[in-house]
Image (cartoon, rainbow, N blue to C red; front, side):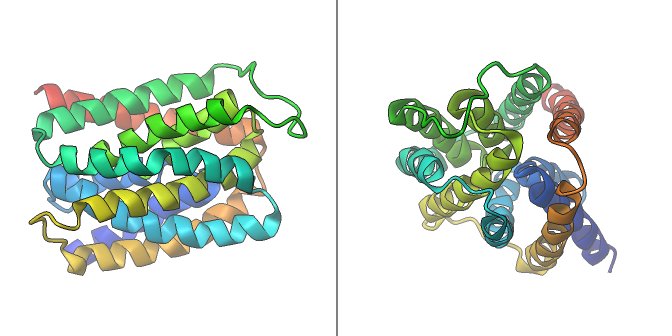
Length: 249
């Protein structure tokens, strides 16, 4: 019973972050699965991809109705990352747990710092950014998604703001499209592995995350873009610090 309650609580928080911020679901889900539910890092990254793929797909539908998804930029960004995500998913199975944890923490910290810095790249959204620039960022994100088992929203949002030039709310909605496609690609690459998903924990976690994402979407409508960005960055820094300490012990 305690395991079920932990799964429900952690899933709700992860979904809330994903729905409100367009990312952060996996960056919170992975440590929750490791430290609360006892998953190994490799099993946690696979389970987190399942959770994030389901949750982000649900949240994407809500953002699409609000008109905050930039489909062209998002599809180019995601398409460039599909092959790197699949390759990274296969490579990740061969990496030691401490390396995965440390790399995860380092990337989360970098993304947080980028989000806290004022962005000079936000431009008029009627001006389309160059496709090559979008594709380059998307390929890098896809590789990270595959190796670390994250949907990539905690990196996609900063990239869509700073590289593509979207405003925060559009970046949040568009990142959900990128997260969904990258997560599915990374999961497909892991399908042939011997990793067994503990559905008794992952099922409740995912269900709670879906419900949390709807609440997160409503929360996003009540906060300014700057407030969302600061909350997102501070949460990432806290998680990164905790995981880095654990990786070097």
